[in-house]
Each structure stands twice: as C-alpha cells, then as structure tokens.
Image (cartoon, rainbow, N blue to C red; front, side, top):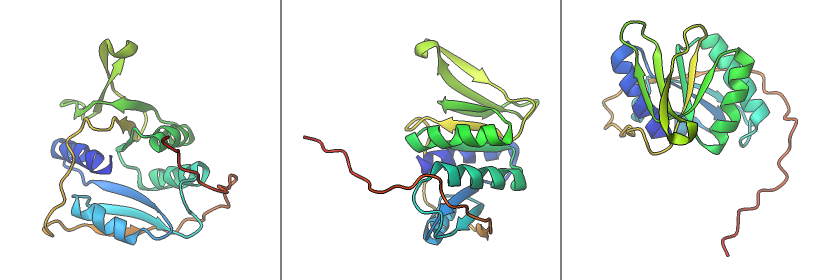
Length: 184
C-alpha cells in the first residue's frame, strides 16, 4: 500500500506545493528509506534503532506521535491495513486530532486548502466527505487498491534521509512466536 500512499501524496503535493515526507521506523531500514526516495518522497524521517523490532503498537504509536508533534506536517496518511487500522487511531488520540479511515478519494479544497477525505458511509450506500478544520495534522487511512500507485523513478529524484534520535522504550508486549496461518 506504500506506493499508493505516495501516489496519493503526490497528487496532494500538486495542489499544496508541499514536499512529501515519510516516516520510517525499524532496526535496519536505511535501504527502505532510499527506496522511498526513488518513489518520489522528498524527505524520509527515519528512526533506526534495533530496539524497535517488528511491529509493536506501543513503540510505533509513541514514535510516530513524537515525530508528528515535532515535525508538524499538515497532513498524515497511512495505509488502511491491519497495522494502519491499529496504529493510526492510537496516534490520533495521542496528538488530539481526528482520523478518517478507509478513504477512497483524497483532494484539496480549493479555497481553504483543507484535505477533503472521502469514504463510504452507511454500508457503502453514500459517500461522505470529511474536512478537519481545527486540528493538525489532518489524518486519513487510504483503502488498499483504490489510489494510483507511485512508480519508482530512474534516479532523477533527489530526496534526503533525516535520521531522528528518539528514546525507544522497552515494549510492554513481547512477541514470543509468529505462526503463519495454515491454508488446508
């Protein structure tokens, strides 16, 4: 879903004339940061720390909230995936902003420069467009396979990696084992 989010951000960039930034957290993620730049990201805000480990909601929510509070982007998009649906409500609650889930369309309101977040409502019978007028960042999750995915560029795009140094707390939850679902 990441190329789709970058593609959606690229469309918003045209209307707002703002850079595309991405947050990247993990143990060994520098190569992923470089890959994000090839998709058109202007700046990658990266926390590379072995203590982050695999997806841990507490650690990730804490770090993403801190980055958003420090960097103050106008808009923050995430994937409408299992992880995104778990992580982003926690982040929105921590930074006291709203979140529109499962957006199928994003655009910029011409006059006020607000993010127009469109999503199905009432069982998909109508489409609701939501504006967040008072709080920042405006946050939305993007439904998978509905946005035009960004394509990797052939070295013509220049971006930069900003290494952030945040304290990583010990997780309250420990994953002991991952057992893949069997398809019998």
